Length: 526
Image (cartoon, rainbow, N blue to C red; front, side, top):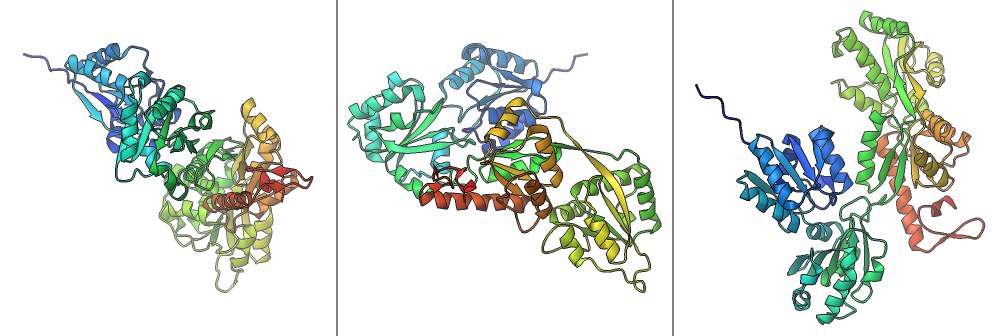
């Protein structure tokens, strides 16, 4: 009787692209997800390391390479023979990388089964993200040994069209000398891009004579675009032209809710920083909620009014405890304070009967909420599940409309622990360009655990109640959407930033003291 043969694993060399995790191909995502071990070197951007951890789901599987290319190739080949699936992450594309080629050759020599999954190169990414199309002819050179570059090769490439060069900043002085010795005119346009496709991508436009000085402050690999494509940048650049590009935005919200905001902010170019200031916990005593759930089933209520996504979640969790589903809402009308809350209800396959079209707040809901009619409304009671610190506006308004209200504490909001010292310092010293407040409690708790945001930090509030609380704490509210929702809040901040850029284009803005101010600080001094 023969024993079962152990399956043979594979080594996948994955080009990750220049740094934006969104540029990973489906094949790359699969390779990371299925890997028993994921190797990377120090050149891999932190954004890709974090993305790999999330995709694979096991941080312990990610290994930093400490071996030589030859030894690393042999190590991965041996692991594959033992049945492991190995993924090697490579910045940009695999084959242009000299060290990656050495690892691939070593793994091949060991008879390993291997795959090479292509990725977008820095040159390709900069052409698209920085808005510099190559024209009819483009030459791409990736320099890993500056001494091997021949001046006439570069000069000939520029004569034919655009040249894109990927190099280390330490080689830029030598590269300038090579360009000039090859006969490239000193006034030829050059764009230098650092952190290609990253949150801090930045492009400076200069010339062959001056690009070394223009690149001061850059680190690591940069991409130089030389020739005709540089002139198109002012019209075609989009990555760095997004309204919140480079803005550090503070999100004082629960960890579960902040993720959605962060993704939207990144789409606008912002760099979000999540600082939980509140935590959501069950009520201290469950008796109120238990009676409310029983009342829903028994037909005690004509309406249920949801004032937040947390209140929706709290009711559904109680439903699960009792083995209930959406059918328990049969014959019950549902009102929601705004679209975000209504969407949380819709996720369970239910369409709310009432959502204010205008101001999405307690006042806005009361404007459209029907009064109780003793003839038509056989049941005259409303269930209002909400936070323990909610205001009395809704209870009073519903009572004035003839309804009996069961005001039930569905969840408690408690203050979170203070953030790290560097975050607290950044909040108080103006290290954040903007802060987004989504409720009055986020204002109170942020000030309580970290102090007031600096006066030059732009303050955006989701609605009038939140704005009033911010004002009470001495903060000036700069942006507020018409509709109280996260997408509208971020759009309001983006519009504010666009206004800032337009005003700065007209020149520095003067403060009340006659100082000239530029940058995100400027609109603080209207």
